[in-house]
Every structure is written in structure tokens, then in C-alpha cells.
Image (cartoon, rainbow, N blue to C red):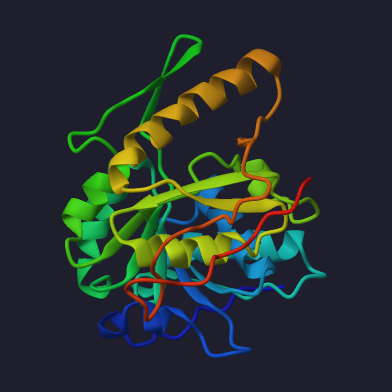
Length: 270
């Protein structure tokens, strides 16, 4: 199966969340900026598998085409709608995820900022370094990668999400995700929107973790999970207890509502 570049679509930034929410029966359109690394490619496969239509962005459209071909060749029996393209094309989609390495996230966001005004933009990078056998969290100047991206995109609604999901598990479409996805943002409708998408993933549970200031702790905690993976030769997943009978999200806001919105999902006991 071969990849065919997607056609450009209108910015849609003025419509914000409304543009990101498709009509009934239509796929959710997403762009992944810097999506040719392991995390971005895995997320593209998972999102396409839950019915989204994904544009996988890269600095090189040819690299994007190669990665998309690899995804489609791995899952030939699945109807995965993934299109290759440059980062600028991915940025034109109604909802955007930045999947670059952490130190390139804000720079890349600035390069395509004109396409991101008014949109929900999710970041999934962690500022980490490896020192000998230890993973060490780094603190970017604004406290987190997500906060740096929000400062770069003041007219966008940035949410931190998906930092804790190992790429191998995220990209294995034969298995559920198995874990809680922590989401935080200074824009409640952004949390609502990303949580609604996450809750479509089999095994995943979206949790509203408050304001974007909490991204510092969420991103840094990934160092702990990676250290556990190294010490125990496994891949751990984050699962919080005590929420089995509580609605996932008590957001008090969602598309078209400033005060109330239906919960994103409701958990059931495992």
C-alpha cells in the first residue's frame, strides 16, 4: 500500500473547537507535526485506527511518505487514513499534535504559528536526559515543554497529553493502550476535546489534571517510568486507583458551553 500526499485544507482557525468537531459520521481531522519519530508514528496509527483522518507532518515530505508507507504496510488489513505531508500541511488541520523532540517543539510551533491560531494544540514531549544509567528530567525555561509551546502560541489552546504512553504500546494496534492519559491545559475546552479523542482509544482513560502548570510534574514523571522500564526490563503503564466510579471529567466546559458539559466518559471497574 502506498502513501498519497493529502490535499491542503483551509486553516479553520477562526472556528476553533467547532472546526475540530466533525459532523456525525465524519472523521476527526488531525495533524501531527514532527510525526515521523517513534511516538508520532505510533500516535498516527492509533488515531487512524479509531476513525480519525491523520496528516503526518515532517520537515521532509519524503520522510513523511516513507513513514506512512511503513505504517500502512504493517497494518494492511486495517483501513487507516493517514496522509503524508510537510509540517505546514499538518498544521492546517483543525486539531494538531506536536510530536517533535522536546527541544524542537516551541521552535517548530513558531514556524507554523500562522496555521495554529485559535486551535487546540496538544504536546506530547518530555524534557529528559540520560546520565549514565539514569533518566533525568530537565526543566525548560518556562517550566515545561507545553508551557513553552503555549507561550509561543498565545492565540492557541495548548494541552499537555500522551507523555506517559510508550510508543511501542501506542503503535501496537492489536492491543489496547492500557493506561491513564493525563491531560492539563489552561483552556478547559482544550482538555475536553483531547480527552474525547483519547477516550476512543481501547484501554485508555483520559483524566483532567488541571491547569498547564501541572505539565511540569507530568512531563518530569516520565523519567521515573523510564527508569522503571530500565530496571525491570519492562514497559510500565500509568494507572491511578480510586477513580473507578467517578466520571473521568468534571470539566465544567466544553464545545459551545462556558459552564457545563456532559462528562467525556464514565469508567467501569476493570
